Image 1 (spheres, rainbow, N blue to C red):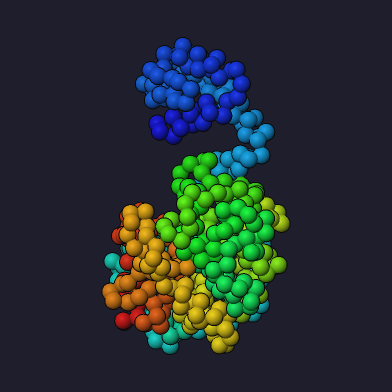
Image 2: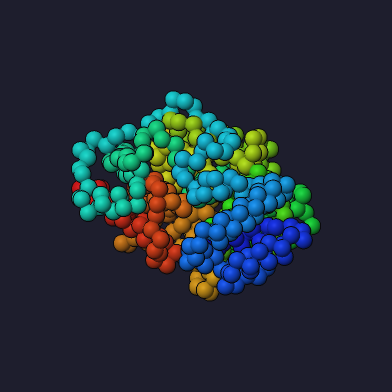
Length: 434
């Protein structure tokens, strides 16, 4: 019932011109309990089974839908709604519904070696936990070799899965690489240094470090449930750059932590402005090829030849995601000891900014530069995470990286952390302790 009520509300809001009162008059004549300019009490339809009345209501709603479609088709800013209605919830294999930019590998990468220790099966209790959130891949790498690797459901060794917001952590590494290259001078630089179109306004004064630490003070709603939410428009829309440049601030930056995807998207724009190459090209040159990735990855774009969705949509294999974790574990160095990201940036990236407070006024001890932080059974853990349970865990004390990909994650949280992460960490420690 709730979805139907929302639908009619959208129709009323989207209807243009003098026909609105006429439409509402018809609804009132159909004996609705309550109708006004923005609310229709739709549950009445389910209670009234009279065929004539139902036919009348369906005709009215059909006409309303026709006008809604025409209305949205005329307005470029709302065309993305069609795609959102068609595909509804994002999926880890959404890559084929958007244009893409390839993040090229060498084609003959150095595979992560298999451990010489025999792999032992997980207890049924832990396997059930992996299964309960529709896991597609689970890999444990310790001491630079694979100790456990299994694929489930529609996952496979060569499957390219969306990392969703774990992509943010990759963008942070690219910022570190650009600093190492000298393309970016400092995280303290205002973003207008690299985005001259923002010079002279409050958004341009936001520092790179404010974006990295999710404390930009930008006006942005991170809600995922509305067709007209900024994140929905960013995911299905075709003008990310324009959407970002139109943002405004609501408070001074560098004070309050607020998780916002726009921060990472602006970081990508800074990278492109600083390096003068596309984000996909830079990621290939400075990250994917030097890491020895076996398969090329790709980034979803907002339009053909357009802007990469840097806040979400990086697709790669589970093994190649493990390489990202190994880079962090090895303080910014590749397997061949080449420095891809300076170790001082890595160290800062995995430190919380304790000067920040969250929305409840509590000190931020759970987030660094686009990486989440937690202590698990006395072990410091850094991790990248995506909305459907995409995780790259780095556990320095055990020289371990864990990758979990899948279709779901827990809706419950312990403080700022989804509860399913504890199942994956428990499973990983069970594997290495065996």
